Length: 264
Ligand SMILES: Nc1ncnc2c1ncn2[C@@H]1O[C@H](COP(=O)(O)OP(=O)(O)OP(=O)(O)O)[C@@H](O)[C@H]1O
Image 1 (tube, rainbow, N blue to C red):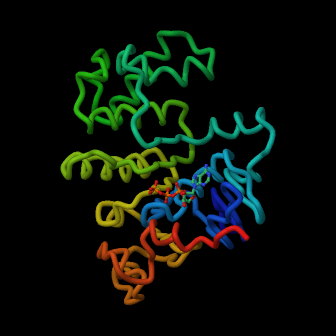
Image 2: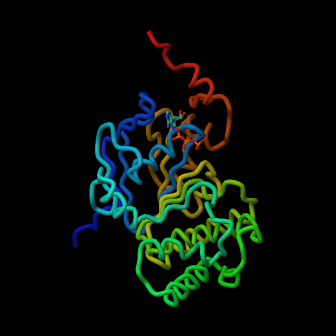
């Protein structure tokens, strides 16, 4: 049987922002059913790469295919493609005037014509999947940070997207809540048959649940392989990143900024 096509295929991608090349010659293939961790220090271009996947930022060169098709340019086709993406953005983006259930229902109300009773049932199923069925009628202000993140996760799952994209899912969470969220990411991926891309600088929390790790630094991918191989790498750049050391082949953002060529 032929291999199923990857859910994301990126080839020779270049991404520019503000007239400057942020990432160049990016090649990445995400197999269906896997969890891929996209790691890298602050400012390396992780969010920029994510913006290319969601179609917010067009490629300056190369190709990006998501869900088996090139990421479209037209707004209408983009909106259609995004229905297949569950995106958990940095911060939870929950609406404080709405209950937990109303927040999770939003994508269903916006994108489907399902009757209210069915929407309520679907919402309770999504909340059950993240262990928060009992919080359906609570307001976001009544939740801990970890619970609010799980509600945002339930909302990202509302339309049953085949591909989940997590942008820094652990920001602001304590170690216990972080562990809960990461094991949930793995469990949902496997039980719902999803594929997940986790964009983060939280290496040590993310590698245990990842099937594949990619490290972005210095304008490109500097590592792509199994999490164990990443942990065992002796490359000074990788070691610097894994150990969070200030000195080494990865420049500090301020130094990188200062090293930009002066305009002629
Ligand atoms: N809209 C923009 N215009 C110009 N430059 C930008 C823009 N957005 C990001 N950049 C630059 O692109 C580079 C990569 O930024 P990006 O936000 O993708 O990094 P990141 O790895 O996601 O960082 P962090 O982990 O801090 O969120 C940075 O040097 C940043 O200053």
